[in-house]
Amino acid sequence: MDKLYSADFARSIDREHTLEPVRRVRARVRRENTLDAVLYSDTKTWPPDDLLVKADKMTVTDSLELRVLRPRPQGLCMCRCLALEP
Image (cartoon, rainbow, N blue to C red; front, top):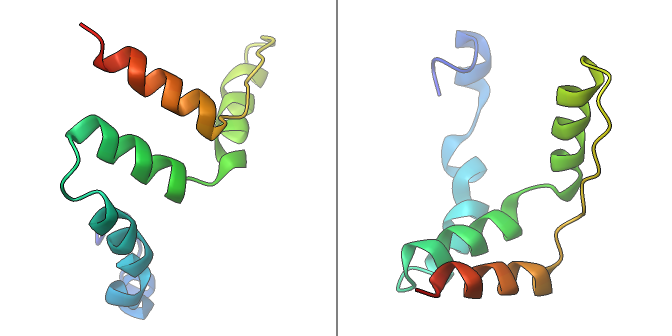
């Protein structure tokens, strides 16, 4: 974290308290395979609108049109099943 934040800001962060929500989510999927654990963790901790903001920033600079669907839990389950098929 020291490389991401200024020294003053890094000292002001309570690192244990900040990471606790992510630790709780990861504890729920500790015994799952890696793909299931990552998908679950991402869907529970990633702000939904963040994906839309990132896509907008990437496309606005080049005047591109992009449609981003908001991920739904049912769609993620379907993607997980497809990824696990041989």
